[in-house]
Image (cartoon, rainbow, N blue to C red; front, side, top):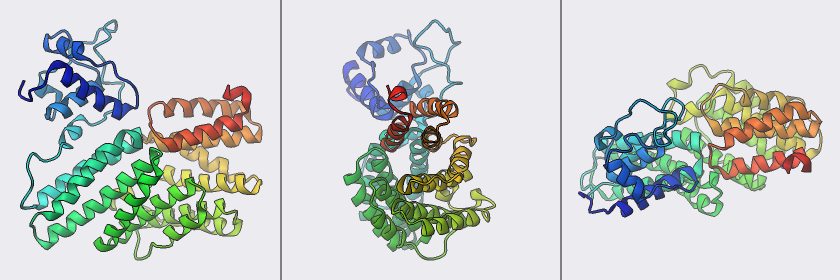
Length: 387
């Protein structure tokens, strides 16, 4: 009533948020809203709770009067939270744009942008770019609009860093969603802002992500140009990531010597990483599993390009596939590539095991890159398994 929405209008907005987040059609309708209002449903499905918080502009389900009662397994509308991933309902509500323009930008405003960006980055890693891209774009547009506000030089510099990070996320999630033409100018925006901001590490993060898209599109020369833009003092984890991505580009070009040189650099550099948590926020995602997935993918590309098998590819991809990590996309892509390699080597029993795991992980992630890896896996399995 406060928002002047009918039950149908509220249902339409909630359904749109749920479908954007999950990539699947939703059955949420006006009848469902009515049953919540009448107390017949007191604890809706997790995605519905999150979307209701977002649309109605509150931070928690409790503010809507929603209460988790004892679960009855025969009731389809009451869902246990214990077996579901946290998709961060509070942060979704916080992503609503400001109610009025900000005339004076404060450090706290920039800190709030950083917090929401962290939420979206986590969501991207667990659910894929398709779920996150539109939210990230709206947040980026809001941050850019804040450049018109008056503030101090220090806060303006912090805002530029926030814009750089958001441009990276928006470009990356666009790429992950398969929106390559939209991702490229967003990467360029981030690179421009990153150069002005002056953080070599953040610029490295952007350049390597942009290079990953060019590798995905089989343009190794463009990927090497992007990777070559990185200079300055970098954390060890960032240098390892840069070396691994450079190795991928050389592998795609069929340059075994250069690919091997950069792979060795990636492994030796990462050995010097002692405490990821002590570095910048974005470096904390460069885990051993992530680096293993990157080096394994370089070897995977090299084998496909040269037709020669490298035994290390299985070890690297297995390390990433079996890592104890909540990042479903990293595990799913490594597992799908591992299955593809094993199929090509003729080890169908282990390959079938990993293929089933990859398919199960992929069910929770909306990613065009992952879909491509699964397609390659099925192609490697042959017509029998693909069917």
